[in-house]
Image 1: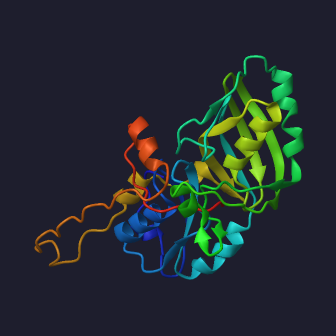
Image 2: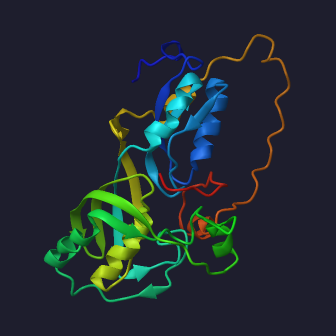
Length: 272
């Protein structure tokens, strides 16, 4: 893709762009950056990723935005890491550990066997730290206030759940699943099935339908495609940079305080 040029795209007629979403960016951050860098009038994404997930994010432009619902409905594939023996309120790294359990007694056979109950059509309850609506309010808003709420379970399909590495307390996995599956909830339920608890520490979306992360552009490649300013615009004084508003997503302040990655996020995400 090193020889890719802007002339290869017709954004008004419609393009399906594959992007590798950076860590801590929301899906909207990526849409906004691509829209501004490439001066695209009509653009949207086909399936969100949480800020602490990376990997494949599909953007549709122009007439191809009509395909967004179709792309969103396709099967997803993820890889990532569960940390056994610890739980967090958000089921991932956005909030601090709230409970610990011994895990050294677990065998490889027990860990691999536990995946069987999470394949096929299953009932899954989304996290409280999610964009699920409760009486017209986002669940994460309730969680941010320290409140509690009952979230209804729903049916999702997990076609494949494979353990790819075991190095306790870490366990790597690969999951193929339907739209609406929360991998954070899978981490919670998997840890509960093993009797030790668990939370998600890494998540990468590697595929949506036939679209693969291996074919995705990086944000650096998008920036390299940025067209020159129109004639006369270069002489204008630079606009004053707006100060980025404080983080709004519950948990990112804790994550940022414990990790060096700068945060781009300012919105909550839904499952893809």
